[in-house]
Image (cartoon, rainbow, N blue to C red; front, side):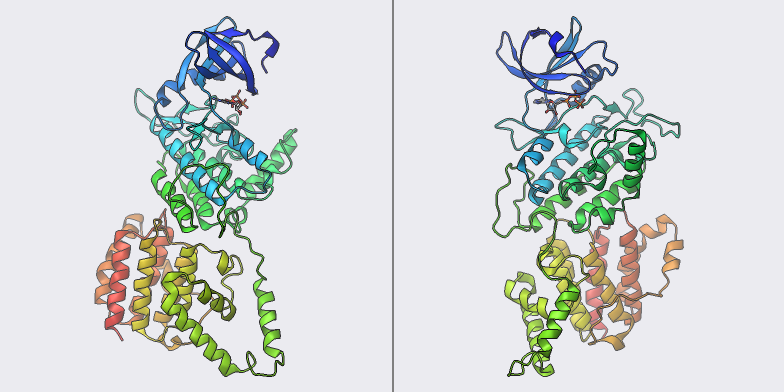
Length: 533
Ligand SMILES: Nc1ncnc2c1ncn2[C@@H]1O[C@H](COP(=O)(O)OP(=O)(O)OP(=O)(O)O)[C@@H](O)[C@H]1O
């Protein structure tokens, strides 16, 4: 830590004012240029500091100039015993904003904006051949007006070039034991717990963990005991981090967060992340939740009347509880046979389903209520009224698919499925999308089950192993082949196998995204279903 008392009042033509923050390696002051009057943030560090981060930053800053959300470097140098950097004066860090809000979690709209902006910042830094390596809330700050909606990256003291400027070669991977670089909370499992060399994927994983942290009451589990003070405590923290499964960390959150974390962890050491795709995913999520189509970070967040922000948790009864309530209602003697009369129930169910058919595209609240009462719970995780519109529509579509009476009805549902997938910016097949394909498969594989609603998942016996045995280049061509072959299919059974293959290949693809070939296959499927009765 710098000796604050020893820092002079003037350094490099700057007059030092208020101390804005002090870190392990130095202090930051609001400072005014003595000739121009320009106000900057002056990062000051003793030249003999054991960890000369200012010196590192000074060499990296020039490569980052001009990027959105990258502070401008106004001056730098050494004066006497002091190494200084004069950079844009910025506003509060995300950490400060989050703490001061006093809320358990950040609003989903804010987190989506943070996601889009941080991914864009990393894309820029990586495009300049630099890794951040210390992504955390304290290193993301908002600008001062008029830039208060922009998030800036600061603190490049741990940053490093991963591309050799001379040879353009990527840094090599290494199994050699190395000191940990990063932070306890958000550094990736590979870097923090397994001692791997950081690369682009690890910056992204840190961002993913940070986003999940913001949406989790009391934060990520391993952050709850504070900074570890002993090696044993640090080891415990690492073990907890390593053991935490994405599905547990992201329980109750929109799927995108779990998908993003898994995606980051699947990336290879030298692989270039698909930054654009993930910015699109979080933009699409925000839009699907009814927020503006913008990555502006608006703070404090604007109140939304029909907010579904924060983790999707609901006050609605658990599925078992709901079933018990319905049973009790059915058994009650209310005089008139209302719920107790099977025929009345069946009639109500039929009407409700008709209403949904008419209204399914409109997200009608009234029909939604009816459906919730007559339908069984989805998977017990996210109640219908808490789902994103895309998830909700796909869930409704799946229910209609399980009740479909013939191929013509299935054909129409496939067309609707295409419509839902294409109306969303994200073409990723979510678990609701997979459920629709599953149901379609079941209907096609065994036509005798038509009309009987199937709510349970079942084991599929078809030749999964054949597909798994195929080499990657064959797999890549599977959807293109399906697209061609679907038009010549002669039975529902053949279509079922194709739907299954399509689901498996998409599930194995890195983005689980429905490609152009995928949509063409689905269109062909809808056509074929009309022909095969
Ligand atoms: N440009 C800036 N404008 C305003 N405040 C800033 C600026 N840069 C940093 N700060 C404040 O100073 C704090 C420390 O900054 P920074 O992280 O760059 O320094 P550091 O010495 O590397 O810190 P640490 O050792 O904690 O990583 C930040 O959390 C932030 O609150």
